[in-house]
Amino acid sequence: MLFIDFSSAFNTIIPQQLICKLDRLGLSTSLCNWLLDFLSQRPQAVRVGNKVSNSITLSTGAPQGCVLSPLLFTLLTHDCTPTYSSNHLVKFADDTTLVGLITKGDETHYRKEVELLTTWCRDNNLLLNVSKTKEVIVNFQRDHTCHPPLTIDGAAVERVSSTKFLGVHISEDLSWTTNTASLAKKAQQRLYFLRKLKRASAPPPILTTFYRGTIESILSSCITVWGGSCTDYNRKALQRIVRTAERIVGVPLPSLQDIYTTRLTRKAITIVNDATHPAHCLFSLLPSGKRYRSLRSRTTRLTNSFIHPPGCETAELPAPSQQNHQTGRSIGRQTGPYPPHPPPPPHTHTHTHTHTHSTTRKHSPHS
Image: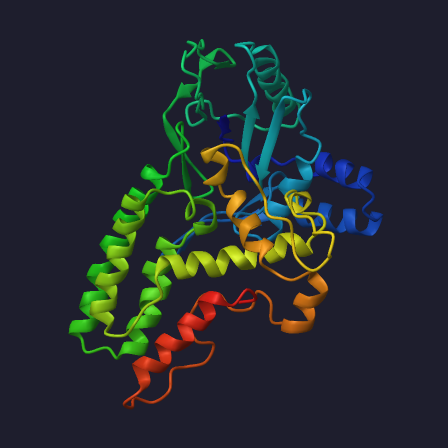
């Protein structure tokens, strides 16, 4: 896997080249002219305190922080596709990864793909930052083959055992130890601020909101990807942080397993209802048309992957027509196993009510 890094990707967009591609995609002339006017002749200045520099006019690149910039970059790179069937390009805005399948030690197609990708970037005014581009080799064969270093424009690409991609650490052994350790470290640091709020006599609702926004959001980041295949040791390490926060806040907090189940079920329903999703073909109805076929795997690695657990969850769900009949338009609105309304005023049975509601959400397939 080659994790590619571009140098100032949004700043290198040439508006005229982008407009030509948009025109070939079928966008209207008026919209193309509007985008060309938006990207051309843009004044820019620098302000430091009360001092403002002289303005300059820019006619290249897309404005940083603009919501259109990632979309325009995606449209610019839509024609960057793999040449060989053994290779696959994963693109998310300016984050691009080349995945190549090497069979019987033959790297010809993989290395040729890298050369073609480098040429495409040069033709489209994109600069590859070789120093930040990383390569990860995933090899579970007993006899490891020594692969020669990969070079781009005469510079060798660094080969690493793990790297960060879209906020998740990808390791060469496909384990989540590095990722969960990073999440635990970040969450532990934010427990300090939760304790400071507790010492300041902040009420439980404020502490819960702070926990959800600064700690739970980290612990559950991309949990549908790694939640089903991380080891029990790593899972318990993260759950200990939840229990620590629970003692600080003073009210029950949802476990990571509850959050994982809720989000995994919601993700599975989303995939089933979206015919354009790449994983939609993995889910098929049984002959009865009321339940989905359970995914089967021959290897433990596939069983523990992020593809297999959603399939098992979906196997217990009703068909889409029954889902819509039972849940209406409420699918996907709830973001976690928390009550949808503010907690009731304190009384004798407050904690019992909260616990019962969380348990119900855990087993609901439509949360």
